[in-house]
Image 1 (spheres, rainbow, N blue to C red):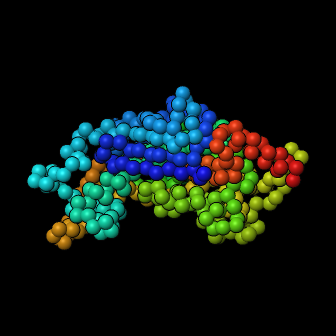
Image 2 (cartoon, rainbow, N blue to C red; image 1 turned 180 degrees about the horizontal axis):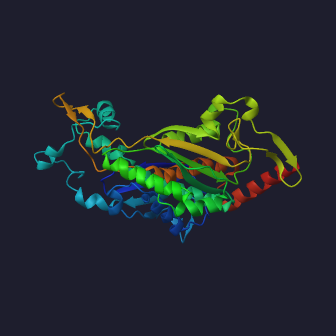
Image 3 (tube, rainbow, N blue to C red; image 1 turned 90 degrees about the vertical axis):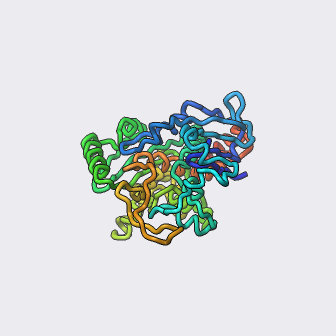
Length: 389
């Protein structure tokens, strides 16, 4: 059975919900580690007031007993503390004839799903669109990714991330061990290693906010320890790098993705791009470099997986852009919903989560079984096969 999940819930509804299907039995879940990932998503310089209201924690409502998965679907719940202020507006009961009808959203915001969703689903209250299209949904996706991370960690596969750029400010490159990278970026308000860069980014975000604007950036996820052969070359939809690219592009406000050196490869010669193959008794087959970001032919090659995504500036601005009222068809300046000036550090955590999920999914496709013990045996046999090759 393939690993998958579905989410439900609105940004101002009572909760966000996910159902995970395909986890093996006997996987021990660390609830503190799960909630730590949710806390990481809420951090970051430039976040708005919503993060002062919410204190995200995940509740498990099925599929886990005495700390271990049972093999049944796992139900995750993240409650919205802000719900208490929106109960009338978001009530599931009919509200004809009440004052709440006057709060219908009929002015779409540029850069959001408001108008497209209203047109597609024939909805005259655009709140029905913006409530679900909100980036608040990434909270429950981070919870799902946190579960995937624990599966990967059981097999020695590590996940970390960092911010590469916020607007005009770029962090200097580093080649730190993954554990040190994770530790240092966790101490940073903008998830960078370099303190001078951190100060510059904070000042830059302050400037952007004072100007009533928003700013985006580039984030990176690195995964170490993934074995050779996750994914496949035989069909387009089995290429793991392609599936990761789709997952990254599904994150709210992400407009680009690259693996390894990515778009830089378009300006280099082949001899400057491809990773030479080496062999030693100690390491077996390995690469002299990792410009292709851990992938060849849609499959992992044993090198670290390196994925970058670019997040556009958040479209909700405090100096609103022009739009058109769907009732009157008259122009107006877009109304302001509560927003962040910069959510790039939080986006780094979301990127880690969706990439970890895709790698875990591919791992279970390759070594899957109904119990953790069965997967362990399959994985051990495969490692022995690689050693003999």
